Every structure is written in structure tokens, then in C-alpha cells.
Image (cartoon, helix red, strand yellow):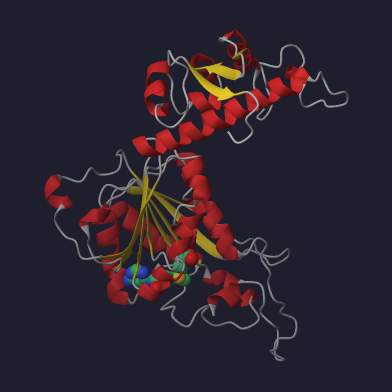
Length: 384
Ligand code: SAM
């Protein structure tokens, strides 16, 4: 199997080839391929990414935390593979407590990369990681027509085994039983340059998986072509195309919580405000019993105990903003934190940038002062 051949655990049990050793890649080669794509996403900030031949969607799982991404689509011909790890793509509690700025949807389709489906039009990046060598000659001929001619994304990344590297493996065969071919660098580059010129793309060649020292000029274990559409951004799908060809079957779909969703924003704000108010109250209570010697982490609790820079590290500007905002205060057994003070904290400000919206979002979930200008708590009530 390919994973063995390229990977970490091939036992050199062929007595005819005693000098050839297992090649261990660190990180494993598949991880290096995912890192390559991850770096591209980081660099080019695509909004929409489609991974053709996504397998168990591990690449999608690797890149999904990029804040630029709004839609990630995976397509694979093997339905069992796609669904095998789909739960790893679901949001977890941290995604609700600290939501993304932008919406993100992930959709997995069962279908073939050589079929046209209009829902994949208008993408910024299409990745085909270790896919093309699984296509027979008919499908390989259809592949550029669909990916470059029809989908026509701004960027395409294609990776495939480099057969120049294969003699370094203990047993020289195809790396996987399902591979229809493995190209050397010249074959891949000739094909890729032909595709690029037919569909008005440029292409650059690189790879991952460095050969061992002294291996000679064999190139990377995985060769990669990065295609960029010349003089154009991603195609904008027209309405006709959008509702045109839907041949893929949706097998999984999920939407991530984001600050664009009012209920999510409200929940995150209530959480952050409650946390901040409790922390300020705690600082105040601690300051009443005087500064504790030897505790360098509570500098602002000296003085009146109402500044509280505990928690995250603030920049000088952020500290200044907090200091010049209205201070928390106490009246009887009540502790008050003005909304304007809360707004000065960057984590709160990210969720809401004016007092009116904050008041409206907090109403009903957090106790406000009579004039609704501050959040209030009982000073001593730990249950709050
Ligand atoms: N890209 C994944 C990765 O790097 O982890 C999986 C690579 S695996 C070697 C090749 C994948 O391509 C398999 O999951 C296989 O089912 C899929 N595949 C093969 N022919 C396909 C086709 N015509 N359309 C879509 N997927 C295909």
C-alpha cells in the first residue's frame, strides 16, 4: 500500500535487496502534503476551497480553522471513506464559546472528480492530492476538461507520486495497488504544461518528501504542480450554472457558529461579559484584604482593585483605553461595571462595538443597573 511505501513502517524483508533501507519521512509524507496546502491557504486566503478525491477529509480537517474560509467542499468517489471520519468536522464547544468572525460551511459530496457539478463553480482553490494516479486513461482525459475548463478556479494544486524516486524504495513497484500509473518528473511536467497552456493557467513545480542524502537527483517523493489562472479571479458562477448540473450526492454538511449569527454573537458576548465582570469583582474583593506579597500576577489589584488586568496580556494602548474608560464601582452590596468599561476590553469589543447594541444583546441574560448603563452583581454572592 502507498502509505507503507511512502511512509514509516516498511520492513525491508526482501533479501535480494539488502542494501535498500526503509525511507522514513518526518513528518509523514501525507502530513507534509497537507502542510503544503495549509501554507498555501495561509498565503492566499481563499474563501472557497474544494478538495477533489478528499478521502476521509483529513486535509479538510487540517485547514478548516483558517479564518478566511467560508466554504470547504470535499468530493470522493468512495462514499464509505468520506463518511468514516465526518464527525471530526463537526463544531465542538470551543467553536461556540469563541466563534469565528465569518460563516463557514463544510459539505462532503459523493461523486467523481471527472463529472461536472455546478455547485463547485466559482472556487478560489481546488486541491487534488494524490488523485490523478487513480484515474484510468479515459477519466484522466476528462479531468482537465472538468477541473480547468469547467470549474476554472483561480488556483489548482495537483500532487502525484514522482516515479524518479521509486528506485529508492526497497521494492520497486507502483506505490499503491489502485494506481493506474506513476509519472516521472518529465512526464508530469509535460502533462501539466500542456493542461496549463490549453486552459490559460501558469504552473510551477515543487514537491514534498526530500530524498535521503546521497540519493542523487531523484526529486521529491511527491511532486506537486501549482496552477494559477492567468489574469483572472475565480469564475463567478452565473445563476443558470448555479442551478444547472447537480450530479453529486451530499453525504455530510455542517455550518460553523460565527459572529454573523445573532444568537451566536449574543451567547459569546454574554459569556465574555460574565467572565470579565466576575474577574473584576474578584479583583476588587481581593484588594479589600490588601495586596498579597509575592503575587506578581495581580498588579492592578493594588490601588482600588477596579482595573483588573488579570487574564490576557494587554498592549499598552489597550491598557490605556481600559484605564480611561469609566471605572467599576460599588454601592452597598452591589458591584457595578459600566458597559463602556466592558467595551474597552478587546475580547468584548470584538463581539460588540457600541453600548446600545451591547445593552440590547445582554438584556434578559445579564443583570443590568436600573438605567441600563452597567452590569451589576451582588458583591458577595459567589453563586453568581
Ligand atoms: N486526497 C486524500 C489524501 O491525500 O489524504 C486521499 C488520497 S487517496 C490516495 C485517493 C482518493 O481519490 C481516494 O479516496 C479515492 O477514493 C479517490 N478517488 C479515486 N478516483 C476518484 C474520482 N474519479 N473522483 C473522486 N475521487 C476519486
